[in-house]
Every structure is written in C-alpha cells, then in structure tokens.
Image 1 (cartoon, helix red, strand yellow):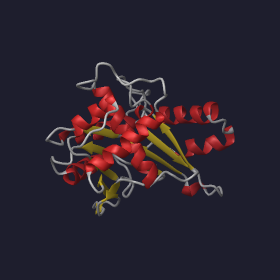
Image 2 (cartoon, one colour):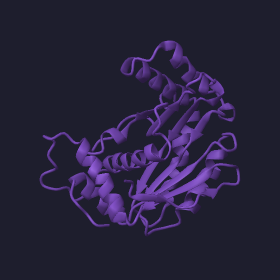
Image 3 (cartoon, helix red, strand yellow):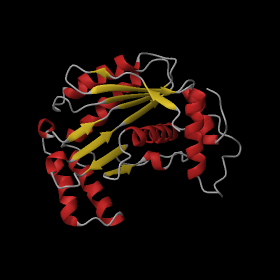
Image 4 (cartoon, one colour):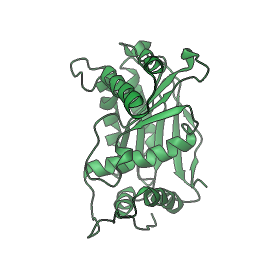
Length: 256
C-alpha cells in the first residue's frame, strides 16, 4: 500500500504539469514506506553505520533523494514492463559517494514498433531541507549540460551512448533495437520532441512554495529551447527532511 498522495496537478503556461506528492495520511507513513524499502534492499550482512550518522555528505543526501524519487516515479509513471530505467544515485542510497551520470533516465520503446511513441524521460533531482528552495535553480544547470557541446562528457549524446551500452552489455538487448534509442535524441533541443524532462525537488514540507520554485525552474529550462509541453516538474515533500534522511541512512524508525 502506498503511503503518499498526489495533490492536484498545476498546469504550466507552456504545457506540462507540476505534480506534488505528500505523505498520506502523514509524513511518518511516507517515511516508514521508504525505510521499509531500504531495509528490504540492504543485504542481511550490511549493518547500519556504527556509530550512527549525525549528518550526511551532500552525495548521500542526493542518493537518498534519488531513491525516494524513483520509488514514487515507479509507482506513478514507470511501473509497466515497457519502461526501462537507468539509475545512478538511487542504486546506492546507503553510500556516501555519488554516482556519475544523469540521476534517472527511463526509456520507453513502443511495443508494437511505432517509433513516434518512443520516449526518453530524464529526471534530475535536487534534495534540500533548507527553508529557502533556491537550490531548485540548480536543476536548470543540470539540463543545460545536456546541450553544452563544449563538454562532450555531459552532453546528451554521451548520455545516449551510456544508456545504449547498458542496454546491450547489461541487459543483452539487440543492437537493432538499441538504435531506436539514438533516434529519440536530436542535436538541438527544439527537435527533441520525444524527450521528456522531469526536474524534481525533494524538500521539507514545512518550507517554501515548491510550485512557485518549480514554475521558475521550468520557465528557465524552456529558454534553453526545449519544445512546449515536454517538461513536467515534481515536488516530493517530507517534514523535517534533513533529519529524516539521516535516520534513513541509519535505518532507524523516525517520526517526521
């Protein structure tokens, strides 16, 4: 049983939505749901940190934020068999370091071969327990990197190369099928009609106006040239997020 709910969607002027997810019936239930997944996925011999952590590295905050995000995203959007995720920090939520690459990429290839329906979802995540939500603006830079041809290692085409390698080498997809992935991406943002961007803010429920912060972020990302209707902002909130993430890392019960 899911222990969060979606608030009413907010429409953006250029199409797309801002979606907001909150604990249901409360943040304690949401926290317990995430903690249960952490416990299930941790190996039996993987002991919690000793002594318990009192603060997290920025990298681990990001990893836990990505883990929370993908749990929600899989339930809300990417749970069907034809969605194939490629994850970074979400795979190492209990580690202090970061993973190289985009936070969350999810590929959808139309099962009947209609390539017009193929999609690549790119979900970049920022997690902050601060009272001000200005950290959300870093999402703009994350997506801008995809278009920076002076930095090939972070550009969209290098990301496509990485996901092609993953699909072929790890998941044993045939090369002919993988070519469809490359066809989704185009050299210019304005022609990337089959890519969907999902800037996501994981934050403290008590602070700020996440809808306003994400609306500003989406406006700035659209200025990079992405087509109208291709951006969907997400807000995921837990009360006392900083403390909650520390206790998640310690794998301890907690009441936000």
